[in-house]
Length: 301
Image (tube, rainbow, N blue to C red; front, side, top):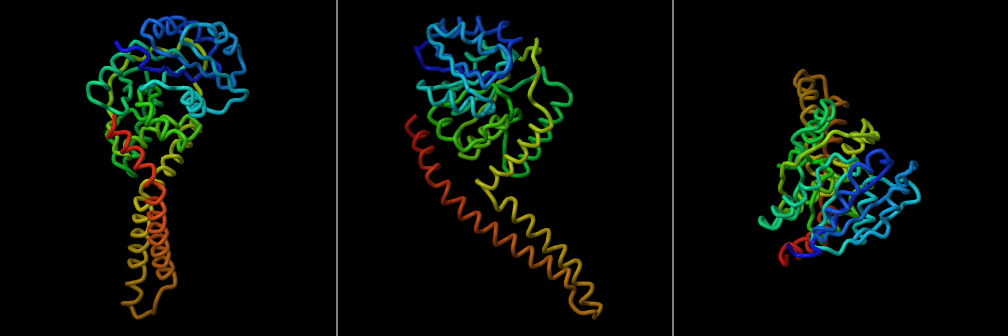
């Protein structure tokens, strides 16, 4: 296997209970494969930083500390600035991922010339979390075509040039996982899924909650506005126009004049259409440079 082709990034926040269970083995595994390992302590308030500090002198390991908690996405962005290998993989710091699956993702990416391989979790998600994942994916599908089932999997292998290009536009929060995947899909990059193994959390506490889900939905709306604003404004325009006609036509036919309410709805529909057209033009201008860069990377890979 070619040396120094992969960097493993692990964002960490208050994982003092789980780090001792897997970190030593992960360090040895990366060293055996000649992979770089970047561990980012995202402002932990427990003893996570002390545990990471013990690996400061380990070969191929880089420790980065955020003074304050900046967010899951921010931790990954920081690590990407120090990544120089052709491929990079993100692994959650809760010990639930089996890092031996990295080999499978890397082999698939190279064989299929993929730009992103998502580790699809086939087990290990709770009932409520599974429902949340399904609802978020269903909402995303309303706004853009997607063929990936596990959008918010934290286990992803990226082509480094592309993830460095897209990451700055993605949020710093937990929704980074969903949004970065949507970026790759919308930029017509080759995105694949591969089933991975999930272990039960042995300690610590998950930071994913209802607020995280809401943040993800908001960011999906934001990303839809960037890529295809008409997908949002055109249905709204049509809805208001149809309701306006349905309200106003019976009044006109009854000889009672013109309904101000129906006129207001029709005017609103025209306003939504105008905003959508303007937003679409602005989106095209903003994405031109991004498209040129991503196409250049895809062409020369």
